[in-house]
Length: 103
Image (cartoon, rainbow, N blue to C red; front, side):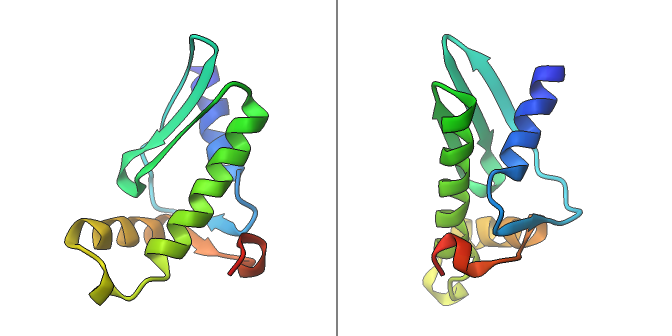
């Protein structure tokens, strides 16, 4: 359970551009077979890496991409499932420093 908490914290802190809001985001974190993984199905995040440092970088990169492609997108350009991801992103995070994720 402690490992899970650490992996969840890693995923939440991976992107300095996004600040956590109060909404709950179910995150599944695993550490097996030499791979660290973090999944958050509600926002289509699925990251894996051999080291925790690489995982943090991968989570940050995916959050940046998800934010740019879904949270900032016009609803008319998104499918219904993509709009749900957008709603989940907006309920979970708020943008703090747009320039740090290339926006």
